[in-house]
Length: 280
Image (cartoon, rainbow, N blue to C red; front, side, top):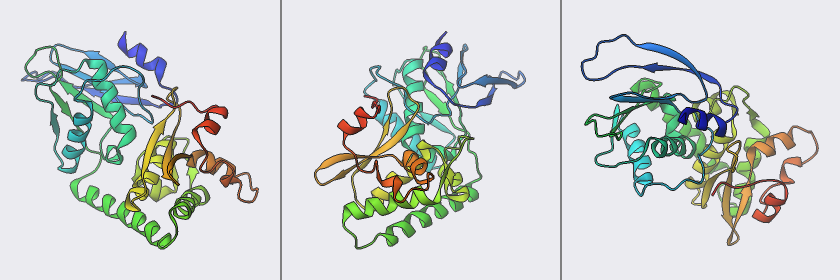
């Protein structure tokens, strides 16, 4: 089954309860199903899947609409819309799941919606045309969460103001390494990250990129080929160099002076030699 293929590709995700409901006048009761990692069940009018991700899916070819769909999802969340309409886009179920997983890995707004995402085939042509979103917080709560995150990010920008770009990157990196811990419960959203000073490779990478964006320093999120890890690259001194906050936290906690800087701003060649394999 497709769900088994997904399970073989994703690791370290907790069990989640998924609500499955029927569309268009079907008044059948809602049923709850406990699933590990992902649950994908194709029904006549509806597909539901669990998408709590800290990583991307790999190497398959994507439809040209992939990037547009992620942007549409993000705009829908910003506008507090319950549905994302895909129009005539005809992505296979597997492609759409991968697109959603990319969204959860690349966009911090993913932390505002529940990991249970509903796929609907309204016109019954065999392709999903609508994505249903479930929000984790009220509109007022969401506004306050975003305001608090913005406040934290702007404080970091002020903290490094006036420094050369490389020093700015080091100061932000060191701030996370010294003040945050890894969250074994795998909470991936920025709200939890800043409130609890605890996060995952996904939330660290997204938070770091958000601050770099405010500093106008080119930065991107990178995912390992086995989907177990996520880090950043920054463009410094005319080259892309790697920044891994999760590894930096581990090194910092050894207690050795400046241990977290031992792997800071390393090249792709060094990262590959240390066992990092980037998803391409």
